[in-house]
Length: 395
Image (cartoon, rainbow, N blue to C red; front, side, top):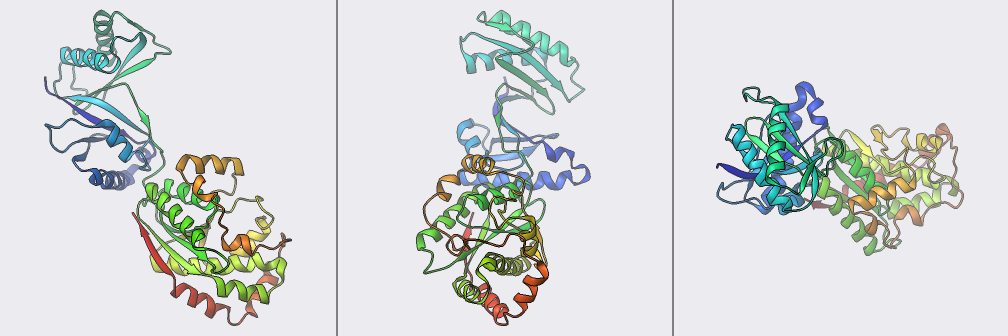
């Protein structure tokens, strides 16, 4: 009997993209194939709203655990189903393969099951209900330890009749979302904290390709603080794909602002300078926005008034995906994506060291802009720091 082991890839939102669907599918396939190329021996084919991962050499069986571990971080996928595929379009063949599949995967265990058929290929002459009933009857006759449960089965035996026939029961959940890079590009302001890596992940999950910028302040920050950020960028790239990280030396700007503006306004001015640098990097990269890890009200400087003062004059769209999240929600995501343990390493970034004891929470934009205009050498310092950035790349 002509059967093979393959992995069915299911995606959700992409199916709702109408005329743009093919572009999203192409991006998703590219992301998965890039990951599969790292282990070799597998390729992706597209079949009627599904991707199928199969061995490049038909004589080689698929290593499901290795393949799913490889492609599971791919954004845009809602599930991976290890399954048996056949091109034998006969009810007798489906029954035989289904019974063999259950025996191979569940042995003599006691369990309840339900057979469910989806007949996308209407040329198959047997209706979905009748196929499920015939398979269910055969399973009960061949496996005396199992029973039928139509409402809450232990095992859902799925039969999909498409260009080929797929039989499976297990679906490993994916991360969902949209393929990274399918919805534009942004520059992530990446600190060593918990929030900004999560913000980057969430925007990558919405299809945004990422570059990143980190503001380094030696000797106030250490090499270990920089290494923490490098490790965070590498971890985010597991999901987003390629990331270019710009490390900007911010010391000169910080000390200049520390000496030149009221201490309660220092955070506002520092973040405005950071945004100007991020905007320039975005323009050079062809990015359309800047992403930050701000969460409204989480700290005193993250009020609506303070954020408006920081954003004014930035000249670029600012995305804050964590604006409505509380800290517990952010930490939960950070643990899930593997950045939390890196972020809590005890090495401070420049914002933590220079934070004002009593930051202004309701700054007036016109006052901030008037004061900034008097800092005549600030634009030159911002330009120099931007031009001297050191670049790291992660794949």
